[in-house]
Length: 177
Image 1 (cartoon, rainbow, N blue to C red):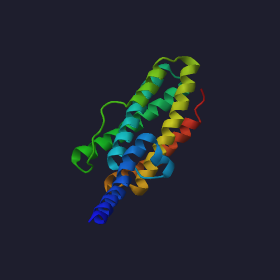
Image 2 (image 1 turned 90 degrees about the horizontal axis):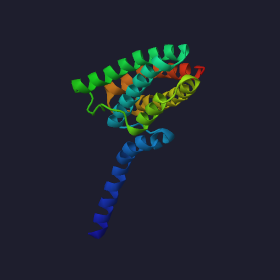
Image 3 (image 1 turned 60 degrees about the horizontal axis):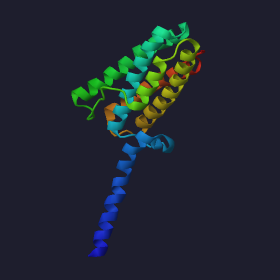
Image 4 (image 1 turned 120 degrees about the vertical axis):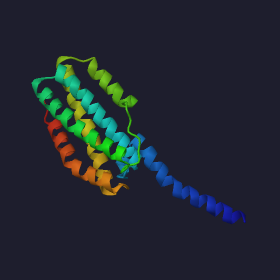
């Protein structure tokens, strides 16, 4: 009887670890390193926070950035507003079961706060760097979900949106402070 209970407990733990790892992995970056697809809830959260950050950082760049940064920022505000609206619509319709965050997480808020305190070339350098990093993360997130996501509609959205985010990364890498 003890062996059966022990085997049952071990089996339950083995089944729970992948699900737990997906949630923890997105928070720690482990999923990105291992190439594991995020859960639907994690994808929605990460994509929504990324969109909010891009929009808010873009607004700052519109005020403080070089002409090149301003043009890039306008493009980011437009595109990330579209993806944000699309995700919200899928959640609202019930096609995607997840919560859409309404505020930045502490990491993104910290980056935004740093940008707020910078001016001139310091702002442009930091904005450029943050944009490259943010879009590398977004490419990874959308790539992994488009390959292994568990919601067909959201998976299709991720796949269709990925080329745009890859273009954003190239544009960010070409920004000059």
